[in-house]
Image (spheres, rainbow, N blue to C red):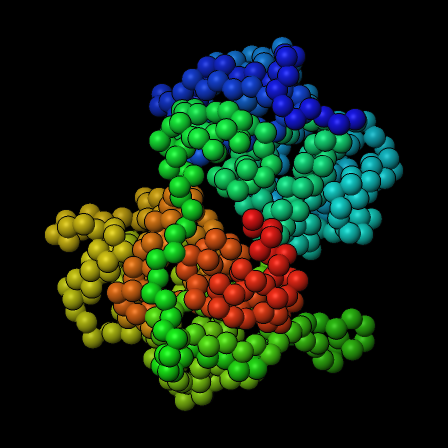
Length: 542
């Protein structure tokens, strides 16, 4: 039976009134009021730190050491007044959760079938045989291929999309009335995001359950939700129907979020430019050794080809965007460009071939010309080193003759260039801090400063904004655009975000299964894609 998609006159499935959440006497969520009708899809949006995840998880008292006040009525029963024993009957049964990162949410020591079957046995009283049959049926309902075989796989043996489907199957095992989906598509490629949203919407209609979607991706909200509630600094500042709020946002914070789409501000390529490329590949091939099955595996290894026959040219002062799903070969291409993977074919940086440089002992000089900014700044910055040590580390390698004071001056100048230090004379306090003392956007600026300090000509940007909120993403992209104009930098931009490609790139290279399937100017590729795969990626991001 089809479920309603808007609020009805009936009592809401969940009614939250005056929700407050505190830690150690400090209030982080203040007087939150919202409701969800049966079968409705409500999106709770806001930047990191706005309180949206804490608010949702506090309803089931899943936030450690939190003091929670107010009321949360689930069909008339107050979740916040229930005992721990009573809540165990609600968690995973009437209210289920899909977490942001399935790889960390799933137990790596058990197969996905065992983990889904455990829910069926605990919540539904199934026998082991019934649980196995139910697990396969649930996996099949999520569209996962070969569900019986996938049930016997461990989480690391599944792709990102398959792991997320397994998480959805586990959440649906007890047929919940309400599903809390905490950033369920953040770790997925753009095409997989669309598939997961369509799957959730289809399953929501089939089961008639309500969905509370927690996200900072406004495109997902527009595509999926019936209503939206916007949070800023622990307070609910605006809520209403998605169409109404997006068409005429009333609160300045909502207006800012909706206006945070990346803007194009780059120096366009000169039509008659004849400058030699700073990065060039011809018939580049990258392969990995893999074990062979059977007796052959005792004597030799096979080869998995991750990149096959790639050609590319990156001009000075321009950006080449590389698009593709996980496993398409784009990250392998980036690692090869950095000289971190062996390759066949020709791969040159500023006219010098990587293979020749490594053979002649000149790879250190070449590494100074090409640097990298990684996807997650928190994991790429050492937690044991101060900011001065992190940003200045490259100078120890490439300019070892600098005195400590000279090196410090260069570090301060780099921090000022990326907008972290306004007054160089007051930079001393910043230099002795550690990465955990900075926000996500500040950490990414630190990562950019670390790459720039050695004076590279090429930056490899590996998903540089995917871990950031939309407003911070816009700031970081504006910084990269300014640095490109001022320094004449060239960027090899690896991303699955079509809006980022549209804002930053001059040319686009599309990869699928290790092959380049389309390559050309950004306007041509994005506006008039020739390959069906490119059209799929562009349409999924619309």
